[in-house]
Length: 493
Image (cartoon, rainbow, N blue to C red; front, side, top):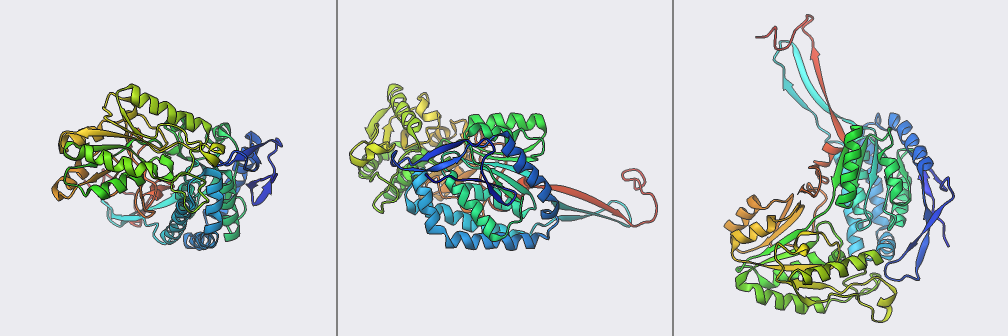
């Protein structure tokens, strides 16, 4: 059994405790990928100490020089794309055509972040005093603790790590215990790209280890992607410790389909949004809200398509839907299916684990559709994070918007319509950080802001230029060359 190591201060090192945990493929419980460090407080202390020391020189390196290293990392991601995609599929399950897209997002983010090192612009402004200049510029924050989920084990950390490095920060990164191998490859790529010792540190371990990073007094910022429950607790700790924190948490995203929509396109969108990544995306289409004129037809068409989706090992080219991540997730999908039916929903298809043949070795759940789901149904309101789709009837456009907004989350949203007026009204009225017109609720691009409102996060936006608002602080400078004391708001009025 291969044993993996942490990456601290430019060295691959064993956990101080000597403890490890196994990583098992969700597609085949007989496939043990390797033993990974179960890191603890001492490992965290060592990584933070290295990152704090490295910050002194890394933050002073000219930003475009940091960009050259990040650009090189992007080139290495390109070279290792197919290899990394296979590793990701093996440890977290989604088909390789999806994991290749995951790596591509890291490539896009690397090239974008590298170019932005020449665009970390500040602002100048006129002074209210004579012979005085006002200016401001961005400064790095320090040591950043990055904690991410398993479902996008390369793309999501790239959104945080690469801009964070570009801005001049140093990183202590904890990937999910469900996808540690992807984190190892991420570290290998940054090491080969020439990131100096201590600038990027990888700690592998279980959930409790993340608490040591969050609570460490020398970690200046936390970037988190994961569940709302954990993210809320992290926010409380960071608030008490006065740390900057970016939280990207849950979603209960809805696709609206109006009577005038292209029905085939809307069905294709809902299938991809609901069952891509086996429904395990924060942006997954968890609800479809269909106007009453095409409600029955929509259900008929999407159910026929969903029943034909091919489940299996994501490494096989014919596979369209992979496993859910583990047995607990499998039970969760079954539980919410039962809740949806008990609360008045109508089971259309799926609703149970898939156990035929080799599927019995993994954690597979059949693509599930439950219709006639109302706002009083828990399935309408609570995140499942699996291939369970609810369908709700809307009386008209206004009712569809009301149903869309009846949710504690506000990450992504979608509407299918040929009416441009209603499309623009939806853009204005939908309570979400992202809205797609005639496309599903998934498909974010690296150069655009990503994030949500309400229970989805704490207002920050990853991706695009806005990510640098997370990973930098503003410094304001006043230069007085009048050669006399000038008291603002006093001597000039």
